[in-house]
Image (cartoon, rainbow, N blue to C red; front, side):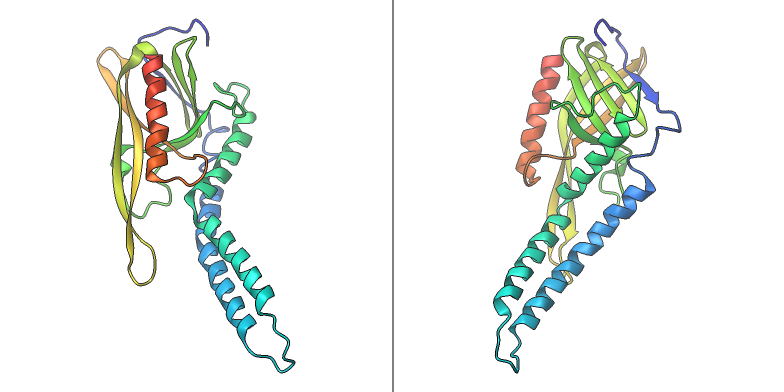
Length: 237
């Protein structure tokens, strides 16, 4: 992409043989299955612990082995319930699919990529959607060519520095029910919203959200990730 220069962003819709292979129906089924498996494993762990603590005619105790197995199962259930674990699996799918594209804008195995989703503001906090992102993929900065590249599941973007109008962090929060007793928690979703020109009289707004990070994906880690993202945007501009 060295030497590529324009004042407008280019958005290319992927051909049918490449499109929809990451956020596929199969991917959504697996993610929903992981959501359901996690509480079942936790219940099994509690049941095993109770069973291990029951008195036996032989007098031999199996409580300690059952305790150890229950702890392992509970940790595994907790890991499955974390959104970050599901996203790591989705990133694996994205890498596999994008490697198959001869015309990909990015190398999915590069170390400096961000795995991101695009969620239009019209989908923010919409309930009942199996997935509120309209696209997911890898974002790369080419500072030499001064261009931002996105290779997604349905589209690919070429956004030269000259097409950038502005960029900022934005967010929304959602109240999530944690258990059957109705305990709730507010979860924040933080975006870098980029406005770009696509013609002389038209622009679009693209809300990018970093979909994966190292360790627990807390609010602070999302904001810190966006701070680095915005620094790279300033450097590109």
